[in-house]
Image (cartoon, rainbow, N blue to C red; front, side, top):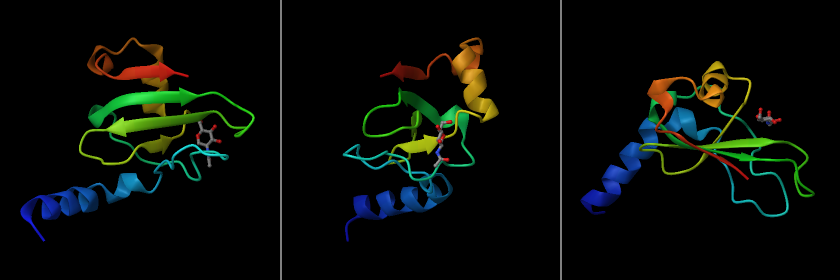
Length: 100
Ligand SMILES: *[C@@H]1O[C@H](CO)[C@@H](O)[C@H](O)[C@H]1NC(C)=O
């Protein structure tokens, strides 16, 4: 096992709490089986909002975090997400919000 691999595994373990809500690639079902109940909004880089579709009857919020190798599903009811979506918090201005 080379160094790079060890680093990747460490990052993965450190982010294990976030990984519980990981998104699976959108196929013929919803991407999110489970939402992450805890997020670190300051580490968020991107939030993608997928509307209801013929393949998934739920609106899905999928976020990308710094140092987390997989996208994470989050619940729009989280206070952090509500604040982000108002667009009024200057600390969160760097986060890209993409509405599909
Ligand atoms: C996850 O959060 C989204 C956005 O709030 C919601 O539409 C969806 O029903 C939630 N999914 C689960 C599995 O709770």
